[in-house]
Length: 160
Image (cartoon, rainbow, N blue to C red; front, side, top):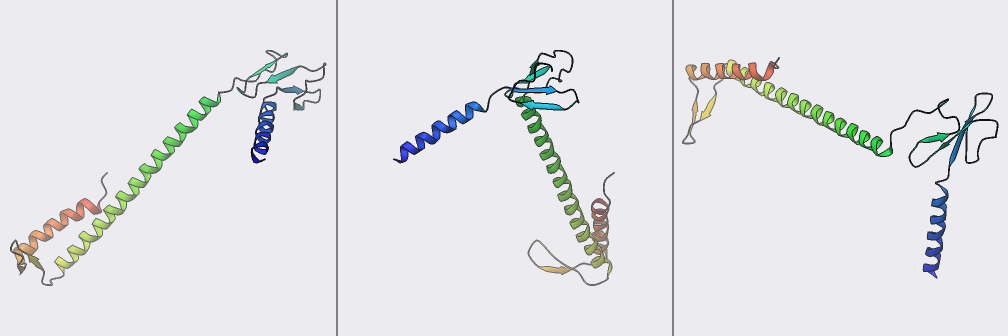
């Protein structure tokens, strides 16, 4: 019973789909109103037959009000996909630029905090190769200040 219902639905859908590809007629009446119909225009008005599948026109008013050639659906789809790819690339480029700017700002903030600590005069410790802590002397502090200043210059001043 179920398969008979499914078969009838399938056959109905098949007939409905074939009716969707009929000719469409376009004409302009004496008032200048454009009409679209599945019925031909009255005999006194020129008409155009529109092919729904390809979007092309053919009519008895050849040359007079000829519609410009339209792009095929494949060309339109290709252009749409190209625009999507370009938009995705632009979005990825903007996200990368934003991530780079955030990383640059983070590194700048860390370098500035390091410089404030070095210039504050507080005692600063480091760890040597043996894992032992030691305090920086004045010459080591000056070297770290110079190194930190270079970091600040590179991270905090955007390249031109």
